[in-house]
Length: 241
Image 1 (cartoon, rainbow, N blue to C red):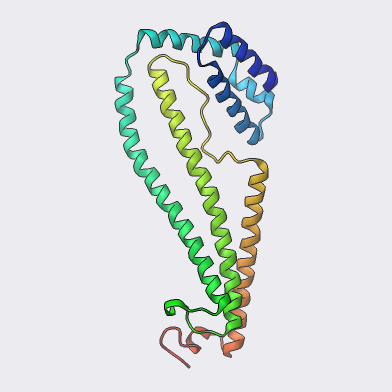
Image 2 (cartoon, rainbow, N blue to C red; image 1 turned 180 degrees about the horizontal axis):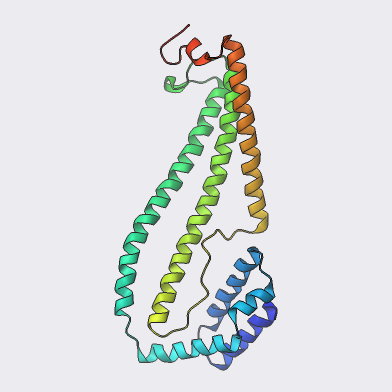
């Protein structure tokens, strides 16, 4: 069975059972297909895992009847409240880490601009010849791009992680009240293959430039200072040869 056939049959069965939110349900399964296809699964494999569309639609019909009669969900709600407490703290730490990554990228970019422009705001850059600083500036610019790519991917991961946790909560409440559950969401970022390739390419190229320019900057600095410990020769730590 293909994706089109599965969704068509599911839509038909939901219509027969007179499910009011049929379009939302079909949309969730369509999104599930998109995520799994991006992970490399075939349409036939996804359909086989989901099962018979008629049985899925029957579950939603049963959930509608259960919703009318009501269901006891107190224990599940209490358990989810405790889970939300710890999950909230964990998500706050992840958000803080994302902010640190973004700040690090911005700091590296700012330092690279200062090195390129020969600027030394608040004397935060140790003394060195301009061309040595320019090479290190290239290295820091590449590091800024690498950190920015990591920040973008981490933000996509965090967003998907939070959506996955939200789906877990929804399914837990649905199962407790006898309702049908929706497909679980993956934790990994659900980016298109094109976006994944671009982020990976940017990360690899910037990493290579960072490593090459950093090593080149060390070599140029040693030659310019006339010795291996150029940081001592230029008095970076209060000592000058």
